Structure formats: C-alpha cells, structure tokens
Amino acid sequence: MESSSAKKSSFVNVIAWLMMGFGGFALLIASFQLFLFLFVLPDEFPEQIINPHSERFIEQFMSFMFTNLPILLGLFMLGNLLQIVVGFGLWKRHKWAWVASMAVFVVILLGTIGGGIFQQIFYSIVFSEMPEVGPEESIFASFQIGVRAFAGFMMLAMSALWIWILYRFLRPEIRREFV
Image 1: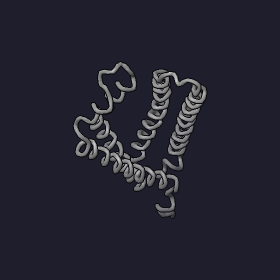
Image 2: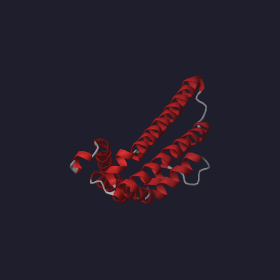
Image 3: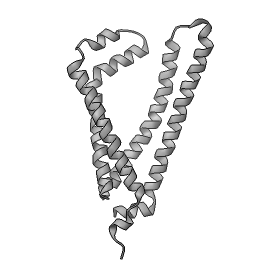
C-alpha cells in the first residue's frame, strides 16, 4: 500500500509554494504602498502631479487611479491573501483548494488577456497624445513598436503558461491527489 506522501506530485507543491511566496511578497509590497499613500504622502499629492480636469486620457486615467488607489490596493491585497490561503490549501491537498485554484487560474488568465488588450489600447491613446518630436520621430516610432510588440509577446507567453498550468491541474493524476 502506498503512503499518501508518495502520491503527492512535485508540480502541485511547486505551484502551491509559488502561490504562497508570490502572494506574500505582493501583499507586503501592496501594504507598504498603501501605508505610504495613506500616511506619508500629503493629501494634495495627486493634484500636485496631475490635472483632474484635463481632457488628455492619460491625466484622466491617472486621476482615476489616484482617486481610487486605496480601494484598488485593498482589492489587490485581498486577492493576494486569497492566493496565500489557496496555496496553503493546495500544499495540504484540500479539495476546496483545487477548485479555488482553478478559479484563480482562470481569473488570472482572463486578467492577463484583458490586461494585454487594455495595454495595447492604452499605448495607442498615450502615444497618439504625445507631441511631435522632430528628427527623432523615427527612433520614437521604433520604440513604440518595440514596446507594443514586447507587451503583446508577454501577454501571449503568460497566457500560454496559465493554460498549461490549467491543463496540468485538470489531468487525472493531479485530480486524484485532491479526492
């Protein structure tokens, strides 16, 4: 008769530890950012660097981000805490953690794709609002193409990684660990 520890795959252990490690690190960084925003930066900080009444998209976007930063960081921190809990549950091979991790992976995959699309739209708007730069314009155009190509490549690569992880988690030998 095999012991239950012999049935545990190293793949699940690695994913669990990565979830706990990255979730913990991101939670620490987000906590530090929230502390700085709430207690260190002056209240008028957002108005000092942006004009909330500007017509330019980038300034409207930054105004939205600064206005809602505590809420956005709080949601981010909640997601990281969830990631730590799910990672620990995976490590302990709880069935709920397998189901929750699948949901987390799908949300991350959709966020990666949506974020990549948003990033391309964002670049289009921001680059179109930039003033003419004169003779250096061709260099700047090459830079724009490079930035957009790299962002698109990273979106595709990360999406492929999350699809592969989802595929591995749906395999019967992994599912049996959580029954």
